[in-house]
Amino acid sequence: MKNFTVGPVQSSQEVCSIGAEQVPYFRTAEFSDVMLENEKLIKKFAKAPEDARAVFLTGSGTAGMEAAVMNTLTVNDKVLIVNGGAFGQRFVRLCQIHNIPYSEIVMETGKALKPEHLMPYERKGYTAFLVNVHETSTGVHYDMNLISEFCERNHMFLIVDAISSFLADDFDMASLKVNVMITSSQKALACPPGISILVLDKKAIEKIEAGSTSCMYFDLKDALKNGERGQTPFTPAVGTLRQINCRLNAIENMGGVQEEISRIADLAQDFRKKIKELPFEIISESMSNAVTPLHPTTASAYDIFITLKDEYDIWICPNGGKLKDYVLRVGHIGALTKEDNDSLIQALKDMQKRGLI
Ligand SMILES: *Cc1c(COP(=O)(O)O)cnc(C)c1O
Image 1: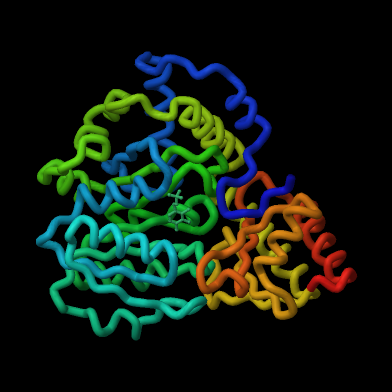
Image 2 (image 1 turned 60 degrees about the vertical axis):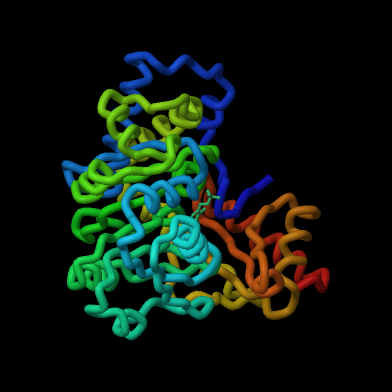
């Protein structure tokens, strides 16, 4: 199988071999060292301020989104959400469930965020901003400088879901003045799913310490306190955290986060150049390096996904809902190479020869 989906993605051989080992007991100095190093490297790669903290929750990326909403927002907030697809909608749903007042900026499929989208919300008393920097469902990457300046001007608390963008696109938490950054294990971190990571700046930590959460498992106060000694309140996905440690160190040893971002950018550019020969249109005005969203002009997107999976053993990402036949997505994250891009292009050319696209 070759996996070009947007997660879970292919892991390196090194990461896979840790998955084959026995899972060790974790209330030990050895595991604490692993966790403290994970925190240090995540902060470094997110370019977080020195006094920021990173916490590791056992749960998929959505667990991190929900924990951020529950621990830093209240019924007294007035939140602005960029809703450009399935993941923006998830923040909307979370605010509804937790009774947090919100307005949403509904984006048209594939469109970039522009100053005119934000203009109506200037000086209207909004207190917090929620955005998925890369709306993975449609492959749109939003302008973080625009968002950061808007939030600073309006004194808004900024929560960024960078789940599918972290390690694939430039991101500087400190200079963008992001208060909470969320990511998870199964996207560009290229580990199995199961761990969600929150990087919290000083302001976010203060909010968490001052607030209260009516939930035990997602209480970040508890997570922060345990994290001081490299531990978690409950049994975490120990094996996945060891795989994350291996992967973070591999990135560091191969030259650091900028190297990894350029490697993924290079793969994305290679694919985008090669796909031009085939009947697909790129539907996003502003792409992340992580994903290329494609509209096939001669066949159903979903049918292409099925044929590639069943007849070529190549997995790309289908879309759900109203985009099912319209969009498919090719990921560039995980252990992939330009030769893998060639195999995918070859398979599509073969489908073209067979009259399937
Ligand atoms: C993958 C992803 C998530 C997390 O989804 P889970 O299935 O909970 O891991 C959240 N936001 C974005 C933008 C994503 O790409």
